[in-house]
Amino acid sequence: MADMQVDVAIIGAGPAGVAAGIGAREAGAKDVLVLERDWDLGGILQQCIHPGFGLHTFKEELTGPEYMHRWVVRAREAGVTFLTNSMVFKLDEDGSLWVMNPERGVFKVTAKATVLAMGCRERPLGAINVPGSRPAGIFTAGTAQRFVNMEGYMPGHRTVVLGSGDIGLIMARRLVWEGARVEGVFELMPWAGGLRRNIAQCLNDYDIPFYLSHTVTRVHGKDRLEGVSVAEVDENRQVLDGTERFIGCDCLLLAVGLIPENELSRMAGVEIHPVTGGPVLNEFYQTSRPSIFAAGNVVIVYDLADWVSQEGVAAGRNAALYAAGALKEPLRRIDIRGGANVRLFSPQYVTAGEDVTVYFRVLRPIEKRCRVFADRGLFERKHRYVRPGEMNEIRLKAEALQALPRSVTTITIDAEEV
Amino acid sequence: MEERILSMICVSCPVGCDLKVQARGKEVVSVEGHSCPRGVDFAKAEVANPTRVFATTVRVAGGKLPVCPVRSRQAVPKERLDDISREVARLTVPAPVTIGQIIVGDVCGTGVDIVATRDLAAEEERS
Ligand SMILES: Cc1cc2nc3c(=O)[nH]c(=O)nc-3n(C[C@H](O)[C@H](O)[C@H](O)COP(=O)(O)OP(=O)(O)OC[C@H]3O[C@@H](n4cnc5c(N)ncnc54)[C@H](O)[C@@H]3O)c2cc1C
Ligand code: SF4
Image (cartoon, rainbow over all chains, first blue to last red):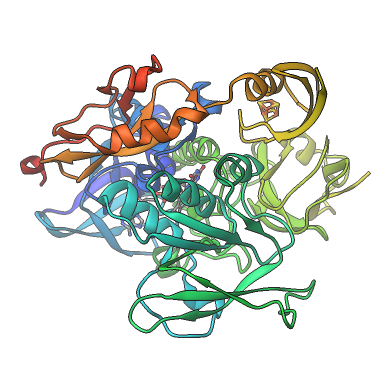
């Protein structure tokens, strides 16, 4: 098929990409093209059939597919073009994309600006070092979610969940509803990975046992999973002698974390942050390659799709401005640094061009009154607690950043007890 | 009637406040720990008649996918979830399915409809 030329090209039609399309059109871009490798739009939210989306955007709690339906309708009304079954397999430094589509073959899309919205993928068992064989019956929680919610088959009848990320908690309840037994959820850390509400409504509601400071030490079975050994760990995550026990099961679900999906970004030479695994961004959601922007889980793993959509709109708008040569020139560069209790955050630097929300996660929970802040008096908010499973926000005003003395080149953000 | 102190997590929004609820029978005497008024409503409902929105899939004949996601349009009594899930599991609906389409009206006499949460085209339309 003939190559295409557009103002803004967007990779991925999840919440980030669909919203970016809207943002780009609203900011005046004429040709806005979203490329999606799946046959349908919506990204990972297609399989998130539980309610819990849209409270911020639509003031009601929708399921994932309902939430995406509304955004896709908006995007079509805004004049965004979608191409499904279209896998982007190569990204050039100038943001041109190479696409494969079963009907159109291989073609090139040249874009004045590009938005990365490829989302994230799940950490597999290989990444977490559990000894034993690799029999059938071990799945990441997200794969199991797709099986049950979209393909209509059950991964197993007696399940153990390793890790307490939200997807694992939601799948535990889902499997119970489908008639399976869930033997327990085992979390290595002394605190939960997922949201409190999911502990309550997915585990407590169904009396599913939840074990903190526990891990799976071995998987058993040759062809099919027959069980796992679990054990308690100490504060250094070392297995405590004598606590190991066997649990029979035919399914092990892994909910052990998500990693931004950045093969394409790397190909284009986009600078990737060593800790977040996503592109280094400024407040315009602009990567180290000026014509390439990024939003959503490809940048940092978000808790709420509503925030992803918000970021998507902004990234799309800035990409459109860039395409039109109208994006503000950076005034200066101020790096953001995480304090003692902060590891993951985005964006990584600001240029004082626009108000910005910095999203971050704490390393350790603080279960008492605490303050979330940016130093130099730029931001402070009191919280009743902060937890690793829940993202925090810091809002920085462009004016306040501009007023900082030139000698200031970093800002530290953190959360601490008061 | 005896007073009880209950601990619960409000699930009305992702904040997930820890609530301490003082209750007498099915009446709530006081609530602590909520960050907004919905926390009190939640505590009252939990004590009197806990409800949840139910989401699952229903089998589809001749669709692009073999199952379609559905939900209860409103929250249903928690104690009825089992019955409802069995009722929905019995069904097969023909494709195409439209978002919002009623799959089961007044499910198990709860007065609540089960509705589809996505569009699902018939198989031959798949390109
Ligand atoms: C398994 C799983 C379950 C989740 N469940 C929840 C939940 O219950 N609640 C919640 O709030 N959050 C959940 N999340 C987080 C959720 O992903 C985000 O809230 C949100 O979906 C992120 O949106 P996104 O657009 O960044 O990514 P995604 O929704 O992942 O969308 C990325 C899209 O890009 C496409 N894509 C990737 N690479 C290419 C390529 N090379 N070419 C073309 N297309 C490409 C993908 O097919 C996909 O459609 C879940 C995440 C995962 C991985
Ligand atoms: S009390 Fe309000 S803020 Fe707290 S979880 Fe419930 S609805 Fe959310």
